[in-house]
Length: 346
Image 1: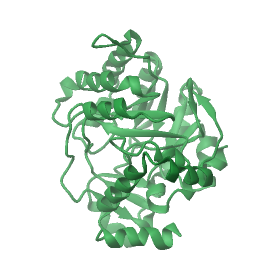
Image 2: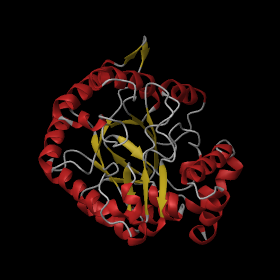
Image 3: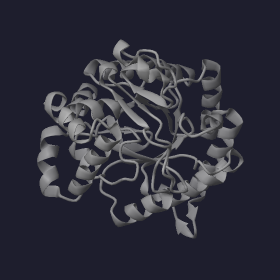
């Protein structure tokens, strides 16, 4: 029904613009966010109860919503009702920013993929902190933070520290995004020395439990990595993560590769931005396996990239993922994807 009726209708009323579809969908979900009478039937139909603890955090099931769908936490009560075991909001930056120029989001249904160059469009860390102060629903919440576009690379540490300080008290875990391809220079922060400086500062802040005189609970830190890293570069990054003591790795972000596009959509290969969805799946599984093997299982992994079916979920689990996340398949095919993945991993 979703593929045959609802998705075509959404694209029709949105003039075929993928970003308008996303915005309209999120607005509807935000309207339902504080309507328990609407959410209870959804939860009964779609939620999968299969609790698990990973890295000291309890998850309602092993399938999470990846960052990028609900950047500013507008529909936090809705996602669990749609079957997600945890939600990752963001990526959020210290400074509010509009993101890159439009068009910047392209749905490729024949390839079962999406290309985006959104550029961390979000209302900023202060706005999200204020929203969560007013309304922080139950459920496992991850918050992804990234560097503001206006912040020079040499000031990245303080930029991340500010967002971490404002948001850590609300998060069950914080994801450090140094791997998006859509902020100039950001991926340079995956270099071992730059990453060590950022993670050491955040670990220190978390241990100190201090933000403007208020207690802040120590929060697990996860690092999101790019699929385009070479094995030696990824091994160096993992060495830093083990040295500093992060909680785990999220593998992977979107890719700059255009391999795997359907022949009918090859014209999109020239579009700048990160590719997600089915073409990324095999590489994401490879990276998860590399992380698991390289760290001898010492770092839990959230596997993300192209997951749609029970077979995909099983492949990611067999590669070493403790949890998975989904975004593109959910956007293109609806909540039944979440239920299938969660049941496969239950």
